[in-house]
Length: 361
Image 1 (cartoon, rainbow, N blue to C red):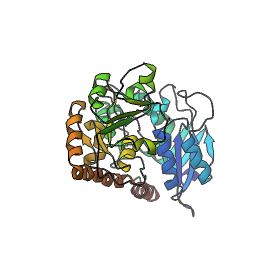
Image 2 (cartoon, one colour; image 1 turned 120 degrees about the vertical axis):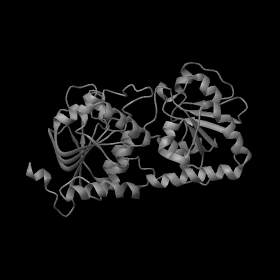
Image 3 (cartoon, rainbow, N blue to C red; image 1 turned 30 degrees about the vertical axis):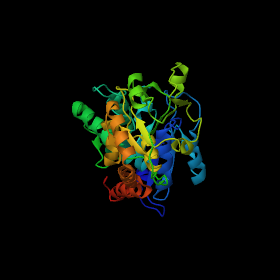
Image 4 (cartoon, rainbow, N blue to C red; image 1 turned 45 degrees about the horizontal axis):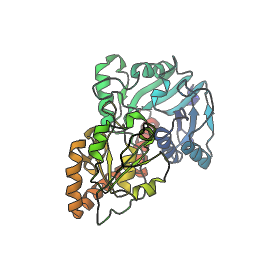
């Protein structure tokens, strides 16, 4: 066990990433981006856990597979013991359908990156948070155990849940958000915005608001209403002649952003994005984003927080005032600078430095 805590060596301390690599979308993409940073800061091992959530196969999300191959990092499947100075476990929700973690974790500092909101709107748990954390807690021996929220709203759900569950107080919360790295190249906003609206998401039901709200957000008088990821609407035979409904991944995201000037993004009232990578992509593309206050909290003044009923007036104002449109788009791109590789590297370096000093930072 002493060897597990050997923080010496030319390549720095041991860093262990733990993930079910079958996660599609945000979780795997976030880990892939982090690995490019972490690989230059320590001796990185990536541990894959097969969970009941995804079954017994050995599939790996394409974004994660690409980075593992690029960095020459092997993927260690279902190791009985994971030992490192800093262990980073991504998205504990993968444990929700099984009774135990299925191995042992030894660390100076164990960080669990939340990803999922602990609470949904109305206060209902997003998943069985207590059970998942307990499975990790029972499997781990660490000097410090921390939860890392990924955004302002995600942090609020984590802290509210912890306050209501004092038995989980052995977990602290990191001071800084463990954001998704967003290093997309910024595109200058248009000088002549038009009332061209769109939304983009995976086709899950939780990603879409009520049909009445979609009608408010994408009305007949808009010049364009482009919905990418409209598989569910297409399958339900929803007919709106003024909507362009495209299946998920049917066009490249870059081409999609060329069709719109405003991203209008609302979800089901019972669900919220924990980070909102599609919003970051739209901001990088020079678009103005309108979304609900909870989802928009991660991006502060970079987005327009509103309700579906307020969308029309906000868009009309900015179409009539191109300078205001450009200023809002510029605020969005300025916010993205806080989600850069360099900023993430600074935060990860602080954690590693704390471990190297013999205490978690």
